[in-house]
Amino acid sequence: AYLTSGATISLAGIMGALCLYEACVGMYFPAIGTLRSKYVPDDNKSVILSLFGIPLNTLVVLAYLFVKQLGMSGALGVSSAALAIATGCMAKLRSIAEKEAAEA
Image (cartoon, rainbow, N blue to C red; front, side, top):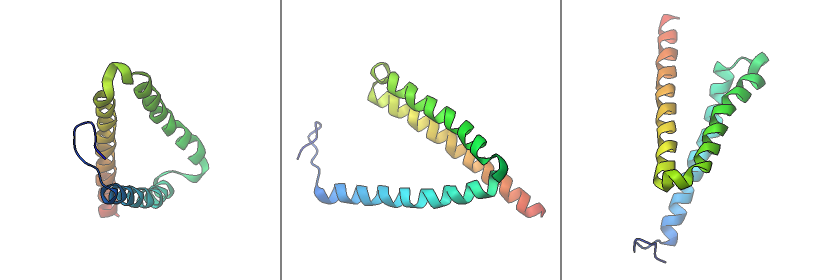
């Protein structure tokens, strides 16, 4: 099969990408569960997680609504920017956790 750019795709490539994706998803859920149990207090967990879902859902809806104006690369750029911000937040959380561990 050919893509619109003329590049060929193979079943082995698709299966490799699928396995890589499934491995990432398989590592994500246990990791995020561990982080939630460590950093989110149990008594307020449902409220906090619901509030964290609002910006994510807003970003998804806005990207979907403006995909015609942004184009596919623009929508993916917005998603990539959000991922970069999340990575920065994760790095900051890690440095805070390391500082707390060093003080204890």
